[in-house]
Structure formats: structure tokens, C-alpha cells
Amino acid sequence: MKTDSVRKIVHVDMDAFYAAVEQRDRPELRGLPVVVGGPPDSRAVVCTASYEARKFGVRSAMPCSQAHRLCPQAVFVAPRFPAYSEASRTFHAILRDYTDAIEPLSLDEAFLDVTENKKGIPLATPIAREIRERVRSELHLTVSAGVSYCKFLAKIASDLRKPDGLSVIPPEKALEFIDALAVSKFFSVGPATRKRLEGIGVRTGLDLRLAGTTRLERLLGKQGVFLHGLSLGIDDRPVVAGRSRKSVGAEDTFRTDTTDILWMRRFLSVLSAKVADRLGGTGGRTVTLKVKYHDFRQVTRSRTLPGPVSDGEDLLRLAEELMAETQAGSVPVRLLGLQVSQFEAADRSPSPWEQLELPLPDAGEGT
Image 1: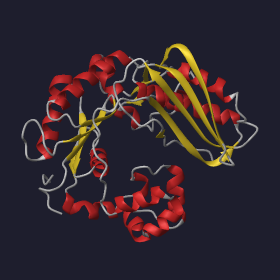
Image 2: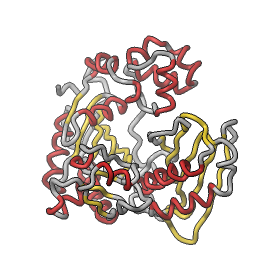
Image 3: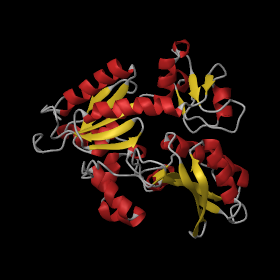
Image 4: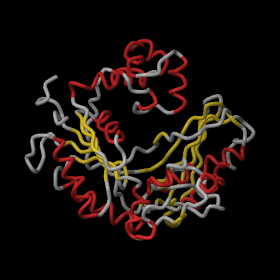
């Protein structure tokens, strides 16, 4: 593969974005474990935790009560979405100085295709380096970046040296890197898919490649074909700019079907917080709950409100009311999903239903 004939893709991801903004704006929080979410004695969940808090095992989507048990000295602060939106606007303005081929994933994360860019810079790595330096100087925040020839590897690369890191996976080193990569790191592989793959002895990228297309398609359908392509370093998905979002949501399939209504309510609290996080303060008027039963029957229940909703606790209340209109609790459930639509304004474009990976019940510059 010639390096001058491939795309040059950059993935940028702000480090612990909400918590970092709080530490920037409140100097007394710097160096302390900070949890952005609800009070530690509430039903709320963690939106973001600073890296100081993550050392104690605190993670996003975790109940705040659990976060408090893990890190009693943590400082809990309520989210300030207007401040995060303002920082996000500056962040995305910096990105647009280099290219219009930007695919936003959230307020603080995006893909860029800089194969042809506004600065005429021939390599992607110097562009990533400039973006990181400008974010530091103009926003007083840090961003991690990954550079490669496709979205899959650029995203993986940005996670390698977090926080405040820059990693490059050039085409000539792609297969060596992929072969050693755990299947859980592959795009679209959540806990349920990982378990199915491990059930046939597939644990790494090399295992995926050796399993072959036919076997993987038989196991996972089209997803298996896609994953086999990734194991070969093939990912032709373009950076899609200018999409207007119509909905934001999160869903996941449980490892085992469950009728445990209390557990499902807790799961809904995590979904609600995750969707609120992805909304970034932008509200939608329609809330939809998706329920898939053990026999693969699927139902949705929706409510359209007079005004927009974006707060996690409001979403949770509506989700619980909608779940009460289903057979959840009496009929085993295998999947729950929550979605918000009919927005006031569209400012980013995640996919309508994004897989949420949660603890589930046993119920060089060559690019």
C-alpha cells in the first residue's frame, strides 16, 4: 500500500471533557478527583470523571453512589452544559481551520479527513499536532489524537496514549498492530458480540482474520463480514460531513434475558445519563423506549412533550413510565434502548442508536 495514495484520517477526542472544563474554570479542583454528575446519594450516574477519579475505578455511566464508595474524597459537581457547548464551539472552529471534512461524534470528539486540507500540509501528523497545540493554548484543555489511513485505526490510535497523547498507525504497520488487538477493541464489538466471538476461540485480530469470512458471517451475519474486513485493515467508511441528526439514542443487548425490573430500572438510569451526555444540552420533544423480548419481538413506546427535554433525570422518569406500558418484568427482556428526537436545533450527528457497553447482568509520520 503506497502511503501517498491512501486517505489521511485524524480522530480527535478531548480528555475527560466535562471534568476538564470544570477543573479549568475552578482552579481549586485541579489535581482533585472530580465527578461530573448528580449528588453521591442520588439515583444519578456519572457523566464524566477526571483522570484523578478514574484511578479509583470511577467511570462514566456508573451510579454516583458507587463512584462515591470507590472514591469517597471525590468532588461531585453538577454538569454545566452551556459551558461545555461554548468550549465545543471553539474546538470545532479550530478543526474547521484545517478541513471541512469533519464528522462530529459528540461535543468533544470528531473524525477529520485531511487528505486534502486548507493548509496544504502533506502529512496528517503535523496537522494533529497543531490542533493539539491550539486546543491547549486557546482553550486551556487537552486533546488526544490518532492518525491513520482509516477511521477504525485512527479511533484506536487516539486511545493509545490518553490523556494528552498523539499516536500514529501507518499503513505498513497496520496488520501487525491489528493482529495483536483484542476483539473487544474492534468497532461494533460490545460485550455480547465479544462473548460470541470468544465462544469460537476468537480473541484477537489475528484470530478474526484466520476465522475467515464464511465462518464469521455464519456467526454474526453482515457484522461478521465487516469485522473480517477490519482484521485485514480494510475500512472504507468515509468521513461524513454535514449530516443533520434526527435522533440520539443508546441501546444494548443483555448477556442473558431478564425479568428483573429493578435491574432494568438501574439500566435505564445509565441509558438516560448516556443519552443526556450525547445531547449536550440540546433538547428533543419526543422520547422513545425500545424493548426487545426474549423471543425477538420488539416494541417501542413514545411520548411527545410540549417542550424539549435533555436532562438525564427527566429522561429516566419518562423511560420508566414508558417501560411500565410494556411487558418488561413479566416477559424476559433481551434489549433496552432509549432515544430522543424532534430537536430544537441540530449541532452534531451521532448514529440514531449507538451501542452502549455496560456491565450487564448474568441475566511515525507516514500518514
